[in-house]
Image 1 (cartoon, one colour):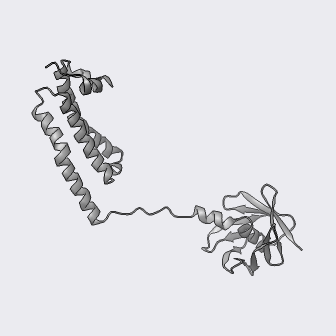
Image 2 (tube, helix red, strand yellow; image 1 turned 135 degrees about the vertical axis):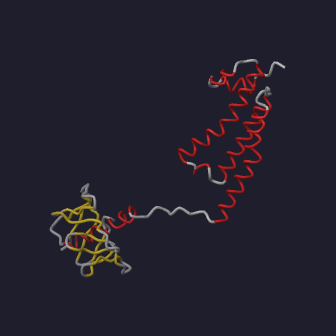
Image 3 (cartoon, rainbow, N blue to C red; image 1 turned 45 degrees about the horizontal axis):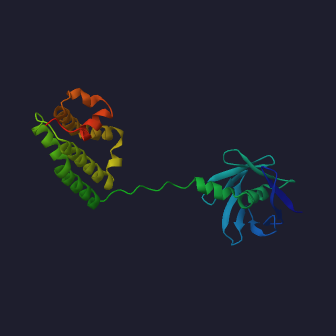
Length: 230
């Protein structure tokens, strides 16, 4: 006697005749051998233990509750139209409802994060040192050394360019994303110091008091584009 199975929406998905599991078109998709379920190639796809369905790793992926076939989360995925044995319901769960495929998909481990080797670390250190020497130190030294003097637009853009160049170096070697919340805040504070200093010097060059740098957008426009008095 054929035992037909329906999914949770009531649609037929296949049937079992004897030990053969077939889809709606009558194509055999596997068979029952003892308490195990095998596909057409003879590979075991799962087995039944009590009322539980288990995959080849021994992990419980579903179970029988009354006349219902349920997944590990308790959701009904299908049922037989007539009485069916536990092994027949297990076979339907694996080969007609695809329970094994769904469970293996959720069990996939996240890709492991590659740890940098010693050559990568040395390259990072070299990039950072060169970047500090070429970009960060001049931005600090020039604005601290000449803080009592004014700064032209060219110097303002030069300071921004140096700090932007160093930031691009960190982004290129992947260190910028590794700073985290606290590290990013510290980095932002360090980069802000020479920008504040050169902005104060630019306001002095324009003839405005230093607190104009506290006005958003206006401060950048004045520092970047307004020519000095002299």
